[in-house]
Amino acid sequence: MSELTLNNGITIPQLGFGVFQIPSEDTQRVVEDALEAGYRHIDTAAAYQNEAGVGAAVRASGIPREEFFVTTKLRNGDQGNVESAFRASVDALGLDYVDLYLIHWPVPSQGLYSQAWKVMETLQAAGRTRSIGVSNFLSEHLERLMESTETLPSVNQIELHPSYQQKELAAKCRELGIAVEAYSPLGQGEDLNSTAVTSIAKAHQASTAQVVLAWHLANGTIVIPKSSDPQRLRDNLAAASLQLTPDELAAITALESGARIGADPAVAAFTQF
Image (cartoon, rainbow, N blue to C red):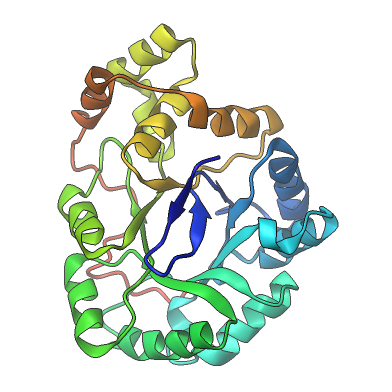
């Protein structure tokens, strides 16, 4: 599995496994299946309410902790309470540290994300998280953060898939040295039905999901698909070996339609409790 080097020198597996919407009672089993398939990068969040299952699977695997990359995220409603929220997450995970801790959404109406970031800087300095980053941050949120803090985010995890590519935001992140990580990388399945993707899949005798994931990887994007099906887990991981031609990559890029699936970070204000 290829790895990318973040702006603080930490490496991250480019293809990981996300556990959004996986029920807590199923999480350990599903993550164990993912680890058996070969995944070593697991992405969770306090708001998903399944951190305990992720940690249980990591501990039960018998694989050394340093071989894993574990991400979790700060709930929106905890931006004024970062220290105790982080402690609750690592306690739920049953781990001594995490590899990446993200502010889940900026929630600009709260006006707290810069304050939260300063506390996260102290967590990183103390070695409790190896890297810190953000999720769903638009350009204006990044600019405000950089005006008032010292540490550049290592990652910005954003909605990104062929029909919603956020090209200007992704380009800005990369220019600043912030890695781009895609959630909903398959457009929640909608992007798999396009003629471009299906024809490329047929040409390579690959699945449509593998084609879209290979497009992400070729663009240098970190990607965290999810599935509860053991065979699909393995198929997704195999996308790392699929090489698309420049014309095929361009055909997928041409699918941009501006079709956002999730909430708008400019106005999203839910607490996640």
